[in-house]
Amino acid sequence: MDWRSNGIRVWQFPRASVPADILSGKPTTANWGEPDYDFSGADANVASHFNGHQIIFDMTFCGDWAGAVYGQGDGCSGSCTDFVANNPTAFAEHFFAIQNLTVYQANFNQVNKPKLFL
Image (cartoon, rainbow, N blue to C red; front, side, top):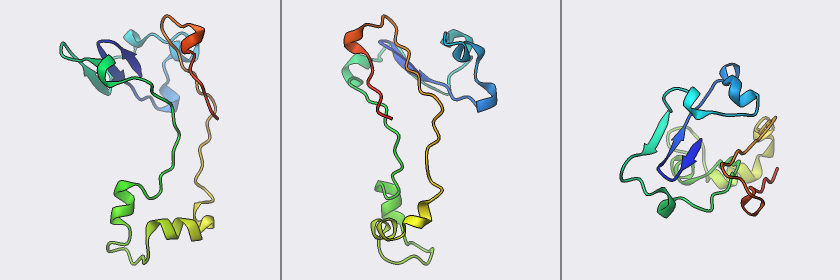
């Protein structure tokens, strides 16, 4: 993700196609082609809408969508929350395997250093 005052752009790369500049620790978004998502433009006022973000890894099994549709036509009874709470073995293979998380920041200073909770 490239987050600047004039917009936010996001790219996704398959593991086997990660750009060399990322792997070398010197990312240059200009080398990555068209972003998958581009939220920029003359009217983009990023600073007024995006600030104080955190990186969160989350497995929400019963969020707004999943919790609302749980049990519709699939033979499940009860609530999604009850199923998750009472069937921990059903989620034994659900995990994150994070090899690396690196945050690069332009004009980096210690005051704004990202906090990583892993």
